[in-house]
Structures are given as structure tokens and as C-alpha cells.
Length: 199
Image (cartoon, rainbow, N blue to C red; front, side, top):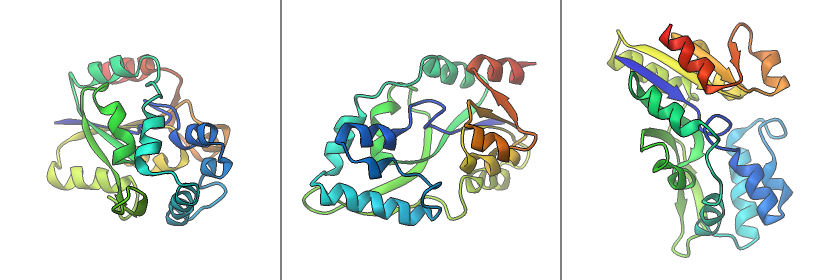
């Protein structure tokens, strides 16, 4: 069986947190692991920023729903699903991803989850993986040892997943990510990916 592990932000949809930072006027929401390498601390800081500014989960989901998927992303997923079982492997949180799931026709989603209090404010984060996106690759290898795995991402936190797939691509990565990419193939379009896996 063929699997395709596809990152969401930067590959299928725009980056969510910078968008929220712009919409809310809260620049701290755009901080990334470049500024705060500890991802858990980064998420805690984001939750605190939202709560301190009286923003509920429903408020940010409403803003996120105004985003549109990247041009060509829907067709890319549609074509990919003809030959692969598509799994969206993302560090986005499930509730934030929901506005987009009907567009890619509901492929499987592996991401994190926000817990909320009775008033709808985010109280904590539940993480779906212990060691990063590589966990999804390892799960597939364990349950389907003869499977072939494609992985596509755009950022530093995708590199390990891509390197452990049978075939992988960095999609329009930043200069900083390219410097850490080693021999990973870099692509600028969905067409390049589809043509490569079909040859």
C-alpha cells in the first residue's frame, strides 16, 4: 500500500499563526520555534496570549475560516488520493484544521488537540505525538511493513519525516530550511511532486 504523509501549513494552506497575529493585532502569535525552540512553551505562550486578550477558541476558528487553501492544493490532494492513502500530518490543532477538511475531501488527519474550559477559552494542549512527525512514519512501518511512503513538508520540523520516507519533498521551503535540508529534493509546485511519483 502507498501512503502520503502531507504537512498542512505551508503546503496546503497558508501559515495559520502569522495570519492570526495579523488579524488580531497580536504580533506575539507569529512567534515560531526560531524564537522559542521549545514547542510546548511556544504553544503555552500562544494560549496565554489568546486568553489574556479575551479570545476564545471559537473566535480564532472564525478568523481561520476566512483563509483559503493554496491554489492547486485541492487538485493535488484529489490526484494523490487516486494512488495513495493520504494522511495530513500537521502541528496544527484539530479545531483549527476543521474549516479546511471539507476542501481536501476529508483525508485522515494526524494533529494535536486543544482542551477548553466551560467558557470556551483554551485551557491546555493535547499532543498526538511524542517525538514529532516521524512517529506517524514509524506507525505505518510497524503496521504495514511493506508500504511505500511519500512525505511532503515545507519546514525544519518536516525534515526527519521526509528523510525517513521512501520518497520525500520540501515544498517551497525557506532559505533557513534549505540550509538544513541536505539532499532532500526541493519543489516549487504540486505538479513536480505528482510527475515525480508517477515516473
